Length: 341
Ligand SMILES: Cc1cc2nc3c(=O)[nH]c(=O)nc-3n(C[C@H](O)[C@H](O)[C@H](O)COP(=O)(O)O)c2cc1C
Image 1 (cartoon, helix red, strand yellow):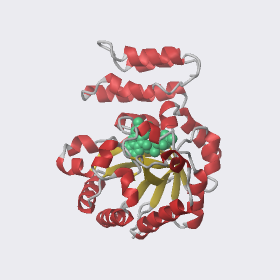
Image 2 (cartoon, helix red, strand yellow):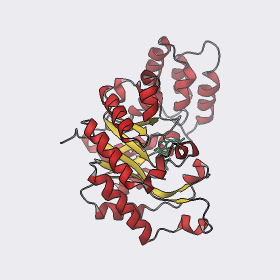
Image 3 (cartoon, rainbow, N blue to C red):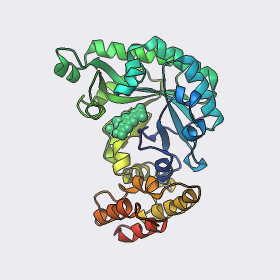
């Protein structure tokens, strides 16, 4: 079955508590072609929880992929079906998150050690929907209680690569449309999630080799991408790049990447003032539906990042938004403190 085409060149990573619908609306302002991912939602929450609240998004967010967490093929298939009905553009399975909570549910990164189960999950999801089904993964895992932990975290040997290839064969065989590879190992056990995003070394070379060995499988590179040039270099061999923390803390990097990719096709990034005007209009609509201003403004703090006026800008948006009576005008006012409008 052929699935709808999605431009995968540039994506923003799923990030719990960060890439909520307000954040995604904001990021959409950087390009209509940016592929956005939701925070992870568990399959069982979709089946048993407040589905409306969990799946709600605005139509301007498209293209938007829903990330699912879970390890039961039937649950994942049923929640993928609901997500398709809600109009999402892709369903992604989380096989990369090593947090304690996720490990207790036996999903996320620990699924990398269960390629047959992941294949069953992907096959069930692919069967259930006509959308692309993708997998977000690591290059490998290890447990935190091994005696040679420090050395094993640093090492990536042929045995690790063979295991990674077995995983790829399984997900490709099950019909996955693309893999998004966070280019480091994940340490399972009681390691803090932040360490798991910093300490295991980035191995772009491993992801590149994977792409060379599986040329028919779309491969998106994730992990540690900061400067636009790094992403552009990776796009020489990868089908796409996915940015997480940098896109959140310095979203202008997205404009820099699209300017380089699509500048000759007329891409013109919005100015800071234009972004803020767009968000002020959005906040106006959301607040009439009962949303709180800080829930929106918290995602805008990185827009000026280290540019002149950024401290005053951040103070205005974070403290000002919590003051009684603060409204969308505050966002317009923030534009005026920027010297980059
Ligand atoms: C606050 C935060 C929350 C995250 N939540 C998720 C998540 O829900 N699902 C997931 O697959 N990865 C999650 N991640 C990992 C990111 O998607 C990404 O793989 C990781 O941050 C590496 O990319 P980066 O170096 O560009 O940030 C999260 C990362 C951060 C910083």
